[in-house]
Length: 491
Image (cartoon, rainbow, N blue to C red; front, side, top):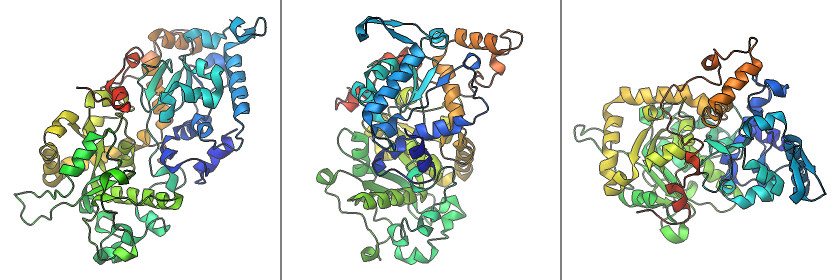
């Protein structure tokens, strides 16, 4: 039902019904595209370790498949469940069902069956039922899922792993294309006057920062919603916007300018609208601090997304404040634009439930982080050590950038030669499959039936870095993220 739509998206043609704000959740498209012709794939179920379900839940959720018949989707999903579980109706009633499990299902009770369903709406029971029917929603409670938040206190999946968002950059170009911020200008998605002061327009296509990262126009960047259970963001607008940090030891250094743009909160913020285009020519850099983005109409929102990416790519630090939970698509946006992430959140919960691929990416070496409680006490004091390093230790900053470049093909779904799907598969085997399952797989597939080479297998390699992600049982314990989603801030 959805393969044609998925292919169109990879080629840069997006369904009109898929909202711009939800396009960061289309991991499933890249996941299936990368696995389709992967050399790890086998057509023999007895030689498989895991079983990938080729379903597009997010496209179905937003009615973005070519065939939008929801009843048909439910019927196909129910048929797939019967095929896997081998349901047999005794008397024609669902209450009298007899389950004759396939060997593949019986081995692990469904934990080796995998689905990517990363839209936040699937954190609630109703939406999986609405999209794929009651039979599939019940089935999905036993399987492994790729999600952006792996809190499972509602029992919606058997096990889950945190997977990366797709970047906000994704809707702006075809898949697997390298990004250069000047390309947005060339393609007319933004105008030089959107982001550059008037005396720099002549350099819009070849700014100094293209050759020297440290010449980027802005120091700190944040653009997003500010109010409604987002206290760290509100505090940042009050304390950091308008703060132009300058080293005391460098009187000749230019003070930093920042971007703090609020979106979607006009009635709350009462900020002035940000400078835009011709009538604002003459307004200088620094005018994007504590202002409101203009986001009326679909084309205006697409333009604002383009400007968001360009401003981010013109900044040095990407402030990733927690919102209503500890997930943040901004972390991926920072990688896509080579802007160093500063994680400002409840760090233990963020790493436990929302930071992906910790086994393979040394997050603490290529990001900065500030504990939320520390930030609340004094935002400027919390940022000062980071800003000092930014100005004083170019070698340390350059090393972070080098590592971001190196690990980007693991994190970015649409990076050239992306390996994200394989990294997600490895994470699933580590977090959701038992050692007994792995040994059984080796015995079934090795020539001599021994398990001596378990750790030599690419799927079972040991973690290269510390991984504090929540494992199977821990995912069922309610976490702080849930309280904030419901507007209750823990003491």
